[in-house]
Image (cartoon, rainbow, N blue to C red; front, side):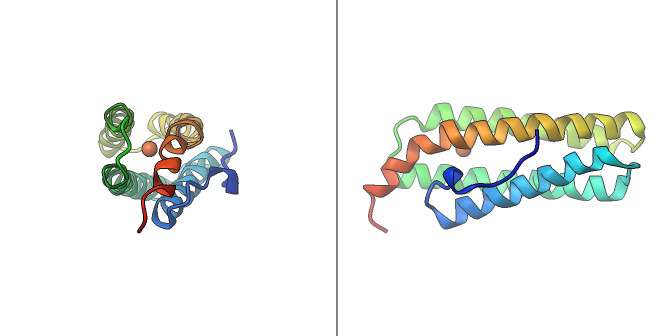
Length: 137
Ligand SMILES: [Fe+2]
C-alpha cells in the first residue's frame, strides 16, 4: 500500500503527530526500495532510523497515555512491543548481511508496516485522543 499522511490521522499532540509523519516517510522509503536495485547501505540506514524512532516514539506515546490517564494502555503497550519485536528481528537478520533475499524481506516488511501503522493510528491511537482533550497542559 502507499502510505501517505493526512490530517484525519492527527491525534492532536505535536510530537506524536510529527513522529507518525516521519515513521510514514521512512516506511515509504523502504517501500520505494522495491522499485529499483538494492542499495544495502541506504536500506540499512532507513531501517536503523525506523527502529530507533519507533522505540523512542512508543516510549513518548506510552508516557503521554499515563499523563492523560488512558485506561487501556496495557493492551496498547502490548501491541507496541509486538511490533518492536518484529522490527528488531528483521534488523538483526539484515545485520547478518545484505543480499537480494534479505532486501526482499525488507521490502515485504515495508508493505506490512505501512498497513500496521495506518491501522494502529486510526484505530488504537485515536482511542486516547479524547483523553487529551480533558487533560490541560
Ligand atoms: Fe500507539
